[in-house]
Image (cartoon, rainbow, N blue to C red; front, side, top):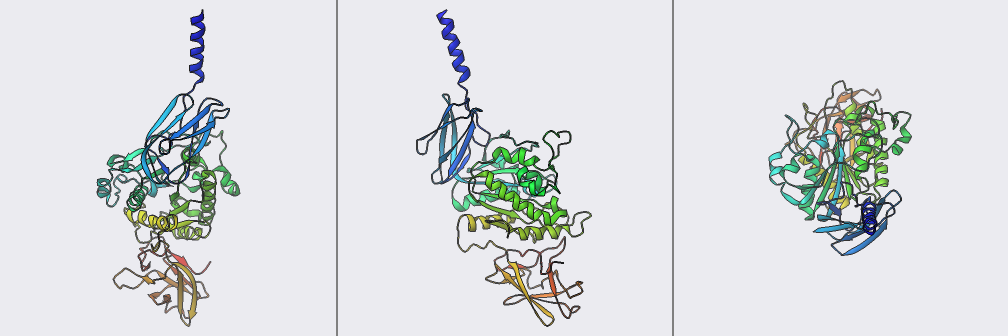
Amino acid sequence: MQKLIISFFLLLSLHVSATVKLPAIIGSNMVLQQRSQAALWGTAAANARVTVTTSWNKKLYTVKAGADGAWKVKVQTPAAGGPYDITISDGKPLTLHNILIGEVWFCSGQSNMEMPVKGFKNQTILHAADILMEADNPQIRLFNVPKKISRVPLSDCNTTWQVSDAASAADFSAVGYQFAQMLQQKLKVPVGIIEATWGGTVIEAWMHAQALQPFTNEIKIPAVTDTLKLSPNDPTNLYNGMVSPVMGYTINGALWYQGESNRGRAAQYRQLMGAMVKSWRTAWDCGEWGFYYVQIAPFVYKGDKGETFLLREAQLKALDDIPNSGMAVSMDVGDQTNIHPADKTIIAKRLLYNALAKTYGYKNIPYATPVYKNMKVATDTVQLFFNNAPNGLTTFSFNKPLSDFEVAGADKVFHPATAWITGYGIAVKSEEVKTPVAVRYAYKDWLVGTLFSNEGLPVSSFRTDEW
């Protein structure tokens, strides 16, 4: 009888001593943000005492799980280094191995961000072989969130952190991977990058329901119970399925390449992007990290009537709305026959310029594209002035004239114009317009930009009017 009682209590103790469970984003091989209060969380038995021990400083953290078993703790991380271990226990220890401390970034968007280093079928990535040849780098860690649609926010996903090599890099975002690769080479610290992408998707799919509340007259959020026709383009579906599982993991910035699927709603897109970033930063709870995004490349979409350049304009204007943001312009590296331009290296570099200058404080690295400031009319010539062009402008076209400038008079009819670089900026003139009122540059769906800063950053399409 005594043996039976002892056996009963042993079984009972095993039952109530639940093993700690962690979301996929918190695991072996991960990178934690250096010099931060890095968030760790998971579940344990209800009301259990959970301890977290970090090997870099032997510090012990204690937290009590809630009635639902959920717990969360923030651990102090040192300067970059590793590998380290973290042991988490509610009575039965779980140890995570090969953890690095360094820089952590999140990248998201549609197909131009999703396009992997190996390319899409019959659509190549420039320099793919070279990128993969250099991919064996244990200082870079990759976390690729699987595609998942959900009507409610999910707390986990089915993947793991991968150490960078040719196999793991091949299937990772070419923009995101090259950003991480170049950042690691520049800073000489470990870099972790998290990818959540899905081609052909709209921005509202990546937004939390609360962030979409000001837009519910135009954007209808599906009911949680409406699961008959799930689509990746339904509002909130990808936030719930792909962002929510990593939300709160301490990062130092986010990269965004999306907009093609919203090009028919340019004015709304500007507002949506600002609302998304504000919502993400609030939910992530680790400061106003840098948000660096790519302006969509010139391309003629079937049936479009100017939507592409209007979306580019909305993205340009969003720079004024989103604090601590930057934009990589791709006016010169589009592809007339392919919505997925092959040169993702220059895009990653231009994002990196923003990060180095604005997030990491590097001085004298050009990162901001010249932006139209104001104009003056001198008889039949318009003088254009620019911000972010302290060293002037150039064509990078072997002294060929600038192209794609247009001028209009009071009749609002635009005519092709001649443009040339001056000491103050650009002069523009059309023989068809004796009294100019407005100027437009590159205001077309497809073109190859000809105007750059003297350091090689292309100028976005712009207009001086609001017609």
